[in-house]
Image (cartoon, rainbow, N blue to C red):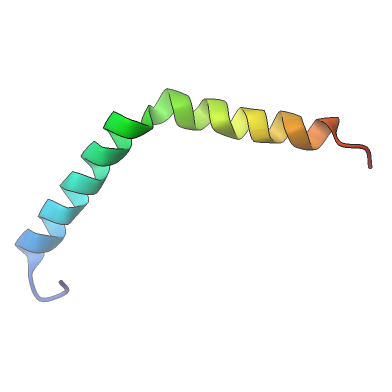
Amino acid sequence: MAADPDLRRTMGERAKNFYQENFGRDRSVARIVSLIEGLNAQPS
C-alpha cells in the first residue's frame, strides 16, 4: 500500500464513505456525549 498512492487514496475514500454512511458526524458526537454523561453519572 505504501508503494501505491492510488490504492491508498481509494482505500481512504472508501473508509470515509463507509464512516459517513454508517455513522456520520452527528451519530459519533451523540455517542461521545452519551459516554461522557454515563461517566458523570457513575459514583466516584
